Length: 85
Image (cartoon, rainbow, N blue to C red):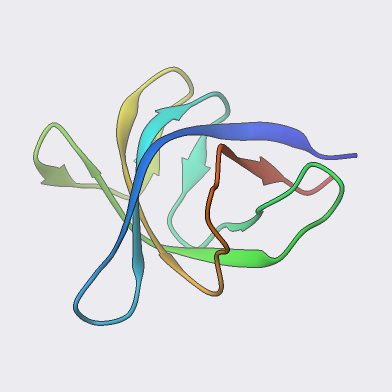
């Protein structure tokens, strides 16, 4: 079982083939982190960008809102991203 790291509010595909996922972090999310799309160990995605308050950053702290730029396969609908244990 994985712990919820990020609640997804919206998701869209970017022009360069990445995913832009907006929502709220429940755990700290760092640039380069590998997250899973299911609490039972779904597909893995890699955080390749983080934007909060209109600025890029290396860390989205728990309870902050922002957008994660993800690399990997996502099958919509997606409600959350999970940190592997």
